[in-house]
Image (cartoon, rainbow, N blue to C red; front, side, top):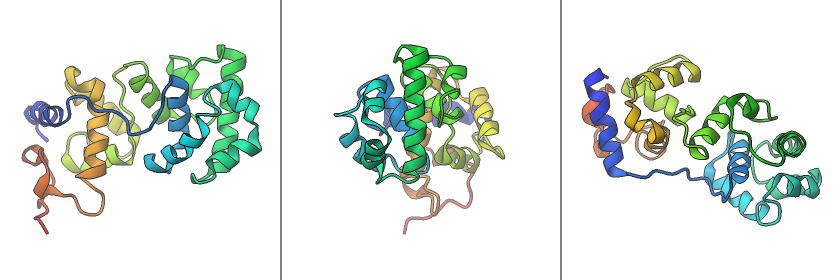
Length: 212
């Protein structure tokens, strides 16, 4: 993708969806952190199904601790790797209560120090909750960035750095949402739906997939 193509690429995504949001359901910064932690190797829909049961009864770090491991596991057992995720979430809640007054920290270093919270999760929280222009590279963003030529890279960190370099500052706050949604619903893994892609004019992928 040429440098001159990047601005119209994002302007088109913005015009189609001016205020993109995460599809994870949450009502507080902590619930967002918990939902993203639970979403690794799981769909947002699957996480939402579990957290609709969990958050009404345990929507704070202390409430999760009070719930205990066994009941927490039972609440999220429909999510893949639920036992590991339950242990990580419980340990994270303990750190939040003991070291952060029950609040979610606003720095990358403090977030990544939490069990089960890696760079991608930290980036999501920093962007969605605190408005920082971070880029959380998941499988969708990795695929779209490489396939379109926007930010080709061999690993998520390389793609993240290239995106931060190439995405115009005006689009950075929402860019990761647009790319995730584009990868989830249009530029899908098995067969990109080029025939209905609004940004195909600036995409390097060839040959473009014809309509079925």
